[in-house]
Length: 147
Image (cartoon, rainbow, N blue to C red; front, side, top):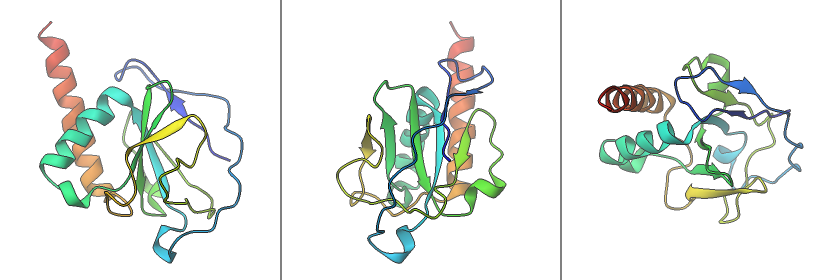
């Protein structure tokens, strides 16, 4: 079962929301797309991380989802990432082997692609994402400290 974590303040501890409805079993388009995990972060930190990744690892960034309310971003990462994911302020969710259909239509109702499949690699490298999220958090803290 997938759960989504949401917070408007990136420095505030995140609290679990009600579980989402299970996704229908989907046919993966290719073997490497079966079972991507999803790292969910607050939108502000996620957008900063996307900018950092585009400047640095650019073509090594996988698809990125955003929710309909604009509160969170979801980065597709390789399967197995959730088992070792420990970045504060984020959560990594396994798709439990269902895989994701990497098509122009988003896999979850109410979401949309910020960086769609086909414009990106199949998944973002977790180590690169971890570094980008850390840098993004430091930038946000510095900007908030100046006001």
